[in-house]
View (tube, rainbow, N blue to C red):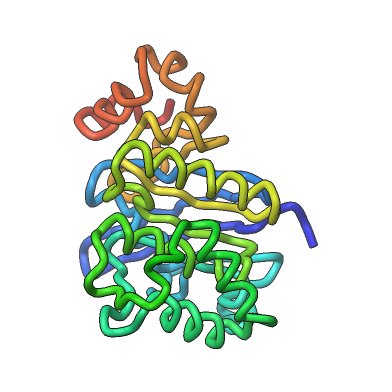
Length: 248
């Protein structure tokens, strides 16, 4: 097994005359957090949905743990998990019930112990028997992240994982995720519009615009390489002036 948790080659997704993702290639190594950045409509969620096997690519390949997802769908999905603010867990089930069901779906060994560890990790003890539908958005986010770690994935896909959290809780969650990555040695693909957060957690970033990877590099040095003082300024430039950055 190589050091790559994820390898994407020449990935493309077309809807009629619309090219949502246009021949992108990148990798995520183990023990690495890669930021997938860009304005709304850039192709981030489409890319994630193809990696999850929800969408079928028009062309290109996706490899997880050296296995092509088209040839080893069940095995690769066992090694992957996902959390997003728009992907709510069933609201009529309690925190424990949700984690238990997903643990069984992923075939987690000693699932009861794993649930206890995650409830402790995400400070969910007092919500153990609470239905998810009555939790606040921040509490639901914590449950969703616990679900995303239930199977100790080799590849973790996080779409705006802290967007509904207050700054103090978001800081704790970022630290929690980084500790999980370091302990598990997994790879993470992380989307966010919070450039402060990206600079803290991401080892590398990829800027998407109109379905293409426009820029990539270290989030701490990339802005200066393109004449900008901050990652936020570079994000705005990618959103407003993508043509000026093509080929750079």
